[in-house]
View (cartoon, one colour):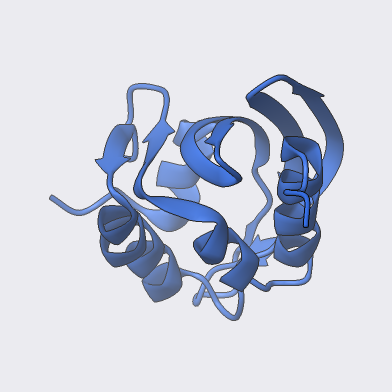
Length: 135
C-alpha cells in the first residue's frame, strides 16, 4: 500500500476541519509536532509536542469557542515536504461573538505525519475576540 502524498494528507485534514472534525488533524500529528503562532501578541508562541498542542492551545480554544472549531481551506499549495494552506475560520465565542480570522498555515511533513505548522493570522483579532492567552 502506498502512502498518501503530503497534499492529500493536508487536504483530508483541512476538509475535516471545515466540518468541525479535528480527529484527522490529531491523527496526522507526529508526537514531536510543533505549532507556532507568529506575531507579537500573547497568543504568539510555539507549542512543542503533540501533547502541548492538545493540552494547551486546543484546550484554551475549546474553553473560549462555542461548538467545534471550524477552519475552511481556500487554497492548498504543495511542494516536496511543505504544504501551504490559505484558510478562513468560521467560529463563534461562548459570548456569541463571531470569530472569523484569516489564516496562512505552512506545514512540514515527514513519513506521512505532520512535523510542524506555522500559523500566520491576525493575532490582534484573536486577542480582541478571544482575550489574552493565559500565562
